[in-house]
Length: 614
Ligand SMILES: [Zn+2]
Image 1 (cartoon, rainbow, N blue to C red):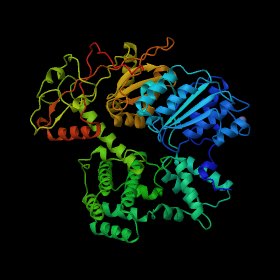
Image 2 (image 1 turned 90 degrees about the vertical axis):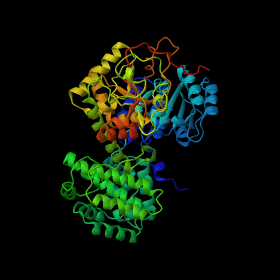
Image 3 (image 1 turned 90 degrees about the horizontal axis):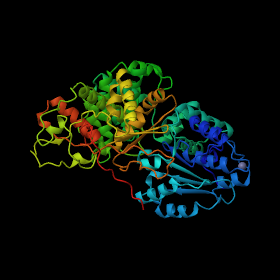
Image 4 (image 1 turned 120 degrees about the vertical axis):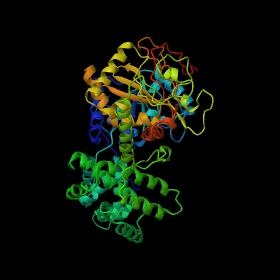
């Protein structure tokens, strides 16, 4: 019999098997028991966290001979066919390999027919964010009037790229990154069942490297088992993953702290002689520094998913540097890893960076273009990047919050001052992108132009009631002095509340992602307090989801709030700002793009663009 990869062999077969997604499996099971089966689900979350597996379990739960049941038998004809992928009623569409328009058109033709074998026709669309605009529009038509026997399951790793029009018609479930100990536990179960001997330290190392994805962890374990001639040990995992022991990291950190350049360089030489990859070297050092930073903040290693390190080392080394220094070091390391990709002399790049760190830096690395950051498959660098972004946004937000609301940040050069002073603006250019093409005449080339990032007050053209509710959220955070949260979420514009969902539109994808990753839990908690029931935050980016949810045709749905009016870009002469403000502003532009806008005024909104009707 052909070899079956571990992750296929151990694919969860029931909701109870799902690792780390209890919130999803519980809610879905309850919905099935109570017969409240939605017609469209959106499964969002990082890769390898169980979205597709859950979709298949849901398909079985609905179509099992004994179903709909939260515990499909797995043995009846329907269950077996769904597992094998031969069911006549379950359709899997991979939007990534095929942008989908033909498939979605075909789907529109076939949805109306009753299921052949089971109770429901289930359409699973994987990586749904990859669909083209036309395919989304075609899908939207079907979602607007789904036949009763049809269930759509849309899975995506990038939910912010799914248009709000689609999201608003789905029940959304967010799959979280699986924790190191959950992954480790699952690996242990599998090893025990397969009678594979594996050291705890080996499994922990695999779990750490898998970065929240169980599928990756299983693939690594699979390779280790096939390589191992006996038990799976930490040394084997390290060898396979190209990791070397951690001791060099501790020595390196010590040398950096004691400004011992010679020792730093000799460690690099030693590692290179041992075949260590430079990029991996920098990445592991960054992971260690991140651990030190987190340890400083938390003072414990419990439940922090730190890079496997003994607490005594963390305790000792975290005292070496102040947090700001670690953040600056991380920024430099991150920049170094980026540069390594094209550097003709990678070793020199690494040595220069390490010597810089050795001299004791206090300022973060400048001129880092966010575009150069890997957009997907991010692992180690991501956490540091986010930490850095968050710190920058927080400092910027605090600075701006301290400024009187009406005051322009600096003498503006062109037509903008009138708006900056708070007068209603005339009909505006397209929202959010406007600032990249200033409407006014070109100005002094020496003075880089940028719009001023005043913290926009959310002025939803959403109903006054929604606006007032959102203001309560803002006030709550203000009361808690959560400056970085405020600085981030107030960049978004409330589009309204709909059912248990809160729609926020951000000018850029980065911001939408940042909010979802870092602040979502906080915002949802506050919303839940206000509404008295769980609420879900949905962030969209103007870049990718330009159309607001349209007013639905069906009477039973209340119309979604309209898009906020297009906001006015404002310009400022950067050279007029004090140097430290210039730096902050430039950081903001690096992070957010130069598309800042004046907070919207109370004014009649302009006509919004409706999505193509056909
Ligand atoms: Zn069954």
